[in-house]
Image: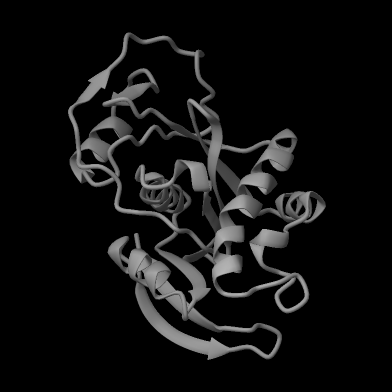
Length: 219
């Protein structure tokens, strides 16, 4: 299930477009969201026909759709991100083999081949965050494997990934994003609530050592 340990990030700073250098950064999908706390900043950039490079203070990042060659790096970011939660809640490969901390590169590649769309957030340190979107039906998309590398947390990257997911779902004609999170991880649940998700129910599965909290967000 999706997991992220992400703070609110820094307050909004002035957005300063660089001189346009198209092609200098990868642009497989729209998305340079340096100001996730500001709807104005996010929407104004998204609607602009401008260079995909924006600076917020010293932080700069891009969000792009990942290719098959990106799978090893993405899987490693997911493992590193989920490992901190697995350690905190005593999750192991024996009692919770499906947790992202134990994700195999081949398993992530298979998901991509079956139609799951993977996105990566990159900054000056390289790939620092990931997420996956999977279509359930015409209206609903599953948001999975939302992960921010431990060394890149508290920069607003989790919120930026959620904002990008919202835009991708809107573009695809969807209306709802659905997630499943560990109910016992109250910090995580509250973080998702701050991103606009609401709890729709909980369920205990026999094969999981925790209660799953189902949440949804309209787009």
